[in-house]
Length: 292
Image (cartoon, rainbow, N blue to C red):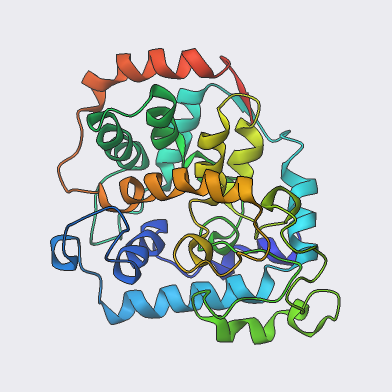
């Protein structure tokens, strides 16, 4: 029996791309890029804004400490399906939504755009692989999860919600905001306890991190786990929970994010020509079969 959090009718976005496009509109000036806002795609469509706003209303209402614990128990057993990395990519590509008027690129092409931009800049091969696979956790949508429990800006649960989180007013409906265990500055945590001791809101970042933590170097794992943690890597809103090691690792998150957000162009990569390179790269780091 599905929980109340998994009902299909509360998936307000036309496409996962709507959330990603909203990020570009909200964060037009990455820390390490020189392009102007108008050089990126522009998404000031009122319908798009309203669907993203409804997405965050649901996200902020239901992403509670208990909800995250329930999803960890449900999905971190990795007992839903076994498949190769490439079968998972094919699976992920079924998320393409033909009703999205802005892009016809499937998930593979977005991942290739990200990883090829990283590759062009001469970064290590594990960095390239991270770009290529960073959104693989979106397969959660194909296991029946609503989009607000798969994508979206992430944030700690178990402590007071920062005003720096997008649409903070929607946390008024979140039960944790009224719970004395969770609504103080530190909540259930200790000062500078380190992010490894902090529960993040549930989604594709956290899911994929746990799947990959035995295979990739630590900087890659930080990129995967925190690439949607915008309240921190844009506003330092949770410095009081980070330790010195987190701050050092977040330099890698800062390097990664411009490639994720700003490498998108309308010309599709030549996936067929690139595949042999990525087959070798995937085989170097990952097992033949992955558990989802």
